[in-house]
Length: 212
Image 1 (cartoon, one colour):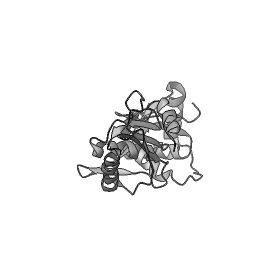
Image 2 (cartoon, helix red, strand yellow):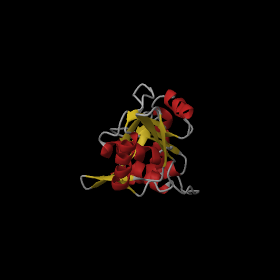
Image 3 (tube, helix red, strand yellow):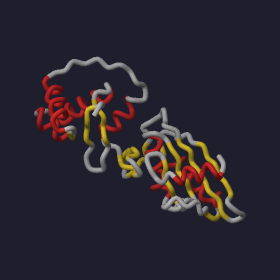
Image 4 (tube, helix red, strand yellow):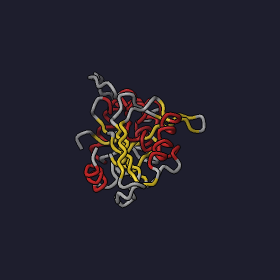
């Protein structure tokens, strides 16, 4: 990767596939960004780039990289594959780019407070994946045709989506008078069947029809 290519990525600004960090402070938190990229569409983590996209570089960039690679090895499960590029801006400062592909081993996660926590990328933020999002990541690695029949609960769901455009798990559960696990299972199954689209949110995900 060339310096020109790094500037081009930086000019895009932070987004679905790009995250900037001036330095590798709190690497145990930065790994969440890498997990989110790998679980979503892949992308780049740039170290030595300001929030506004200025490629200002960081002193002792090799030390920043060492800290990040140690955190990746210790905190991320299963093992995360990535490409690393280090470029010097001058004798003192450099930039590091972690290139993450959309992983075939997703969902990647970290252990926090004795819980597995996966993250996904939503626009320029990395948020914790819901139980439904986790299941979709896990089962969606190998796309396959799904055959199912529309019953009363599916008809209620589709009618509501045609009327309102979106629905949450809790709303569907209440409308269809279903236990949470069955409402969750139905939504996950319809996402995997390409009927619905899940839109991850920090508080509560919502679902829309795939073509909407």
